[in-house]
Amino acid sequence: MYQVLFLDILTGKSGNYISFSEGNMDYLPVNCDILLVNQPIDFDLYIRYSNDSYTLLIKAGNIFNSTSQQQLLENDVSYLYIIPETKEKLLEYQSKTLSQLLQNPNLTEKRRTVILHDAIINQVNYLFDEGVNKAVIYQTKEIVKVMLDQLSANLISTQSLLKLVSHNYYTYSHSVNVSIYSIALAQELGLTPESLSVVANGAILHDIGKTKIDPKIITKPARLTNEEMRIMYDHPKLGVEILRALGETDIAVLKIVGMHHYKLDGSGYGADRDEEEISIETQIVTVADIFDALSTKRTYKEAIPYFTAFKTMKVMMNNQINTQFLNKLIVLMGRSA
Image (cartoon, rainbow, N blue to C red; front, side):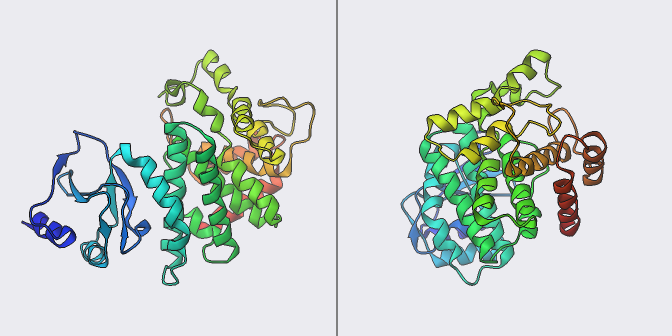
């Protein structure tokens, strides 16, 4: 009865709903905060019930009105769901509405940060799952720019972003985590807005070469063989090739993508180095990349505590990474704890 009454209020039509079990299809979460009131929704939205059934709540093309919003709030519904086939429509909608949403002066810093974090997670997830093209790269950079603008205007903080870092490893969440750590570290170091933009874009795209590697290798629930490692070693070079083919002209961003696995002692791997010095921006992303790889759960290992990750980096990588940057990251993570 509750299900029907709730839907009556939201749709205005008694009994106009369809229920699906979770086993029939996958659903992807959509933060209700990204929905603009009194605007049409470009994709079907479903609500999830405690018995893991999903119900069509708002059909594509219908208006998400203030009554719908109020009912969701009163019933403590923070997320609705879409089916994977409409993921691209969600990203298009998100691209159109994000800046307008963030103009709301009543948004708390926490809600503002969650909206931005969900937006970039959705975008990078699509980037790695559905393939890379110029439009998707552009949309990804646009969301990064919005995030940096919000930071510059003090509407969000790196501390609020750090609290949203995921501890489960997926290529897309790793890229977002590394971007957050890198932005926080670059800001702490006092880099210029131009360098901060390079760091943010390079970090979010640093593993884009993995889109050209067999997913079975990426998600293998065990240590990689020597041959599989050799294939993985190609991902920085592949990333540079992908971005160049799509028209990327920012050499500093390409250096991050191609050289983030090179170390200061000359070890490591990546695109052709030609004895070139590793840029400050790349060194920042390298520290962030290693820290996230150590401190997140993977298919073949559990996450290790921050303290242990930092100790490992200090003891085993003292000559390989910029220890000044590492020390700054330790301070940052201590503040956010």
